[in-house]
Length: 348
Image (cartoon, rainbow, N blue to C red; front, side, top):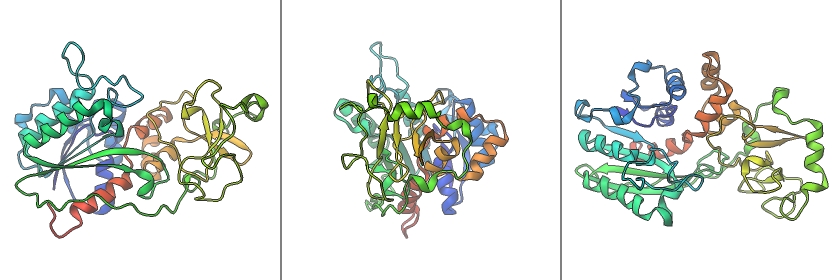
């Protein structure tokens, strides 16, 4: 199978294929961030000269026309609820970063892969993005594809992280039999605690003074009370709650999840693209509070410890690991998706 990877990040699609034992030949990958490119190269054992870099510079006419699969996850900054929500175009008609979808589309139009799979934020399907989302579906349909889309949550596919993402599976009309369905959810048998390290460096913990402040009355206002999905916080048993359980809110004036402490017995909140600076997800550890480590971020995205080891051994900083992990896709979700596509008799 020939694979062209666009907006590659650290290659979650590729990791899922590898984990499933599905062999593929990498035509090229495309990642503009130099740290993510290096991480991709290290994790997948491929040379960086296979990276196209800037997708806008790709000459689609030079690409092979026997590609089986294109994967892409165009930028979400102008679509997500946390972004500017400008859609695909600025007022002057120029493309936003999310408008880079059209570069993926021109490559799909030129190469006609059997299948193209896109990943993006759930908000692309929201009320404010009706027009951009329809442009995506119409563009792919006009390029010759039947499109299937769904919102998949990592917590439904084996990873204790509440992370909802949109997936669009586009199958070329001449080979599509109309039988594709998205994978059914599976029971979650783990909680965040199962993905945490046993021995964590002291630098990740908050000071005793900070802990006293968290537990002090000034954090017990109506706005910032200790809470859980069930109401008030209590001693939790694993899997008591299907969702992130807030132990304490450190932000006296807002509700940013990065300022909240979460119980390890619940789910992780959505891991975002953070680059250190104290905005990492924070967890209760016994009587203490600490940040999740870069290794824990990678584990909660479905990557193996050996993937983290090779990054650290080759000089990828902790700050960059946080960033590339939060910007990736949960690997087990993709494994379930690929089983639906390639694990049936009528494989493409």
